[in-house]
Image 1 (spheres, rainbow, N blue to C red):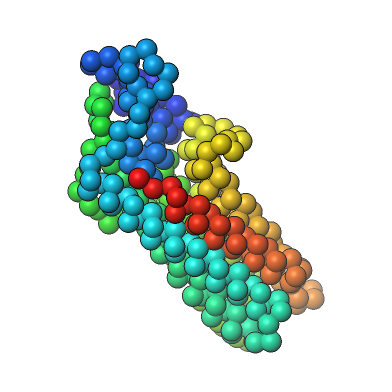
Image 2: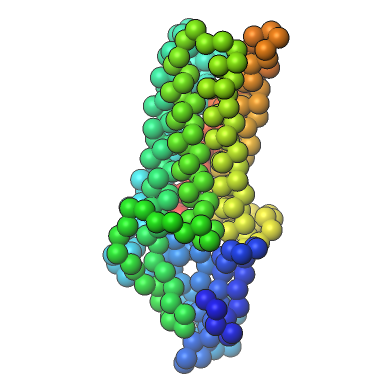
Length: 279
């Protein structure tokens, strides 16, 4: 980055696409999501508008494929368990502990999917200025790169799953006052939803290389859009679950359960779609 002959795309301080000329003619095009998910760099011959995607080495390809599969399956199972928990809460004959247990199990899968998504951003092959292929770096379990849009989006997603974990653990508590319910259960729920929404917005910015817009011909756009719809439905559920101090009851339990169920199904669908977004 920083070379005068490079053309950058993105939003604000974030770069999601770079184009630079190659010494032998033509150009290379790097896109953050394609590099992170598929491990590819586009190389255009001289005078051509399109090019072929050059994959990273076998180590990076196997790594990305493995991480993508784990994250996808984790979100599919986590979403299915959240939907089951909401269905039990709405229609089941079991008590609150039963649905809370199902939610908690689903939360563990969401934690896994969130962290593996972050690992995918951390260990994605990187581009080198002027080069025509991606370079694989040594494996890392953690990094701090807030000026990378893909890292920031994945980090906020993972942070959201951890905050949801607080909400899910606190939901096992009994004998709480209305104020305690709203502070220990409802507040972490809302914070987690906000983190999911911000993460999803950044993911849309990454896919669209700027202001979010419709790109229905692209699989990556559908994955991000479906997940963002799930985040919106989770937020609707959280707002409907607020316990009113005057009555001691939730604003609307039915909307809360249905928002969770449909939002969770969105994440399961997004996980299924993500299975096809691999090197």
